[in-house]
Length: 319
Image (cartoon, rainbow, N blue to C red; front, top):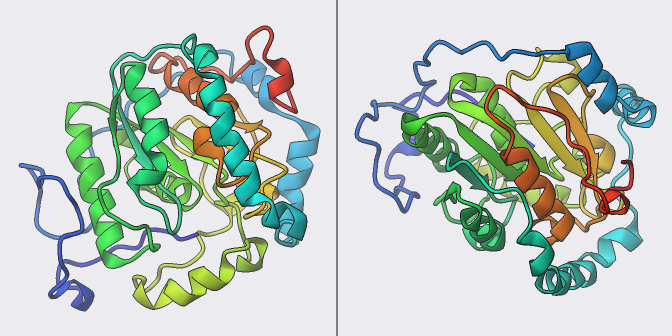
């Protein structure tokens, strides 16, 4: 729910601020917290771009994107919101029952994956997802910044430093859950030369009004800790094209954020994929885990839109 503003190294809120990261400082870290000097961004080839765009474009989704841009909709219905805990508990139970299926998920190539938690969550919330991806062969990292209270000085600074540290070994894929996905997209916009792809899970990056989320009161309460200038990102339709391949995972039964705020106009390198999940259950949902594994297994510079494997089409509502 927030863009990542520039923070000068002498920012008053940094004085006396404890280091929130539980990892070592990067050996090549530079003083300050401003944008990192980037290497030249390699051009991403887009073979058969028009054909690929046609496969990911869906009239219903494009209409939803246009509606959000023109007129903000309401937050999710009360029923979906009140049943979030129950539906999440069911997802956790189903995860245990589908482990045999997930063992057949596409394996990884060992590249680095950064997983960012949602508002009010810590790395503990992404432990199941990270363990799953580690088992597939990826070099997986949590964010190591404790509780995600939103775009505080420590959080913004810590994420930038962490990305710089991890990208020393090559481009990083970022998986962001809810607010973590918004952070992921902003990091990719700032440093496209460091990011391989972005996968968002119920992330309302296209939100234009905080009333489109059920956590509006919590976000406003925590706003006193946020960096000056940290506000809703500019409207998605007014921004330059997203610079790296991205997959936006959303659910029409999301009880926390309006699903229409979690999608964008699809193109040759940007896809929206619907799943059946509660907002709090994305990280335990077998369908979502399979989808993430499939997206991360894409060869670098050879990104293709997701197509459900045979026998799994029913698990993806809009497939």
